Image (cartoon, rainbow, N blue to C red; front, side):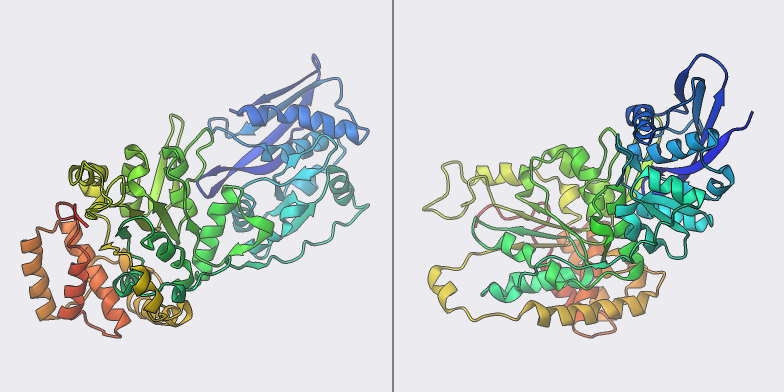
Length: 504
């Protein structure tokens, strides 16, 4: 008894793993059975497939239809198995030639009228099919997305009927249009920020090396305004980074119109977001904000307002550059190499140190509020600055600062120096560099060792000070990190755990 086979994929992180859809039609009581650890969405495919066939004037034979999703010990999730199941059933019914389906994979969700709807994960599926030298059948709306996989025999079908006619040779589905490079959203100009020279400098250093940044100051001081202008300072993603980021967004079902993401993502979740929304997880272990911010920026406004467990979940991704979602059946890993930028008030009322506006619990309120951030998390912040708001008079007379375009040129030059220093296979920015890769002058090394003892820096803090110093040296065009560069880097760590201000 012949068994029809069609390839498809299950997703583990951004990796597409092969799943073989096997269909056997045999004598017995009529039924449509599905085995191979399908979840509820996959189990419901039998009704969508049945309805799509009925819409075309076809019906299942009055026999026993058995669908097996191999390997049987891997959980299958998602509605994208609708299309490969339908194709395998049609091949088992001799409606489609089985040999035409042998060298291709398929994914797509079926409507009751036979239309093929978009699904998540088309880009990593297309890349995996290309590596195996398979063709790919996908929804017509995602043909441009699949086209980024390169040389691949691609069939982007609008509905099941046209797909049947294509494989039977009575209709030719045209090749999908090439995908477009996605641009970033509107860019806010740093020239809008008047005064605040120290904060502007810290933002530039942070962007040059991809360093984590924490801004502390009263409401209306300009923290969010500075963070919103960070994306305009960052250089475009390299082709490899763009593909990585686009694959994450594809798995999350957030890749719009098949456009490849070429700008660093900027994510700013609300403080009510759950731990699963930030770190990844949920029923289907979707990527969280830390992964959606991969190769970009994760901005946490009012950081202490986030749940403590959610903030502590950031510690491992900040060090490892990836996050692992653990399940009883599997451990799923997503990339999460992001730059953390956070803002917070000095206390809950926000006016600690302002005698005319602070609450009656000062300074205890500031200690309690800042105590919501653990020492290990704060130790991962490379740059901590205090934002002092300008008075209305100072704001009116402050000169306009440099524009984002001018600052971005310096940052691009600094990033180019780092890439040339580390090579193609090395760290992509100074924030990822190991201490052994950073060359300090003898004076800078002696100064850092002495200051680390005085400031009681941890081993992590010591290395991160070296990294920030390396970025400052790159902005200055210096091949070797000098003592002034380290001195500025250490100035950004004076408000680390145990030294954060409790008065304005």
